[in-house]
Length: 152
Image 1 (tube, rainbow, N blue to C red):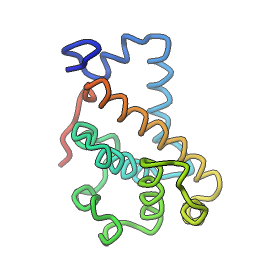
Image 2: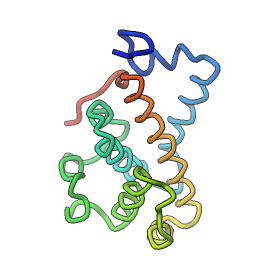
Image 3: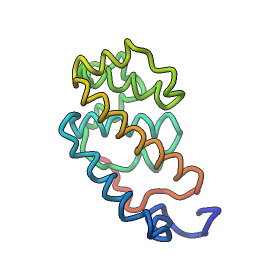
């Protein structure tokens, strides 16, 4: 339920904003096809943002398949053996970005660039902005994503 319009999900709310909804949906869909960052890594970052913002609905959403082990151990990503060095660098970057993007250190940016290059760092930043914004809007609107598919 949303405080803006009761009984609608996030997709229905976006439909009420026709000037931006189509463009935003295109942007969101295209984030997962960025060539500089794998869709799996992006999905792990999106899921971590959902955890950090305590959005159970966004965490339940499956935009791109990741392993059940990765999903289950995402809260403990620094120690869990199921994440690659690239994923760890991106997850660390994601955590700081979620709290205060101005607090990202050069070392954290360099760790991402070591795996993804400069263009990959920019792509990750763009994706995080889209994910973070949508999760925060959903929480503010009190509107869960439509079509939440349970992960298996």
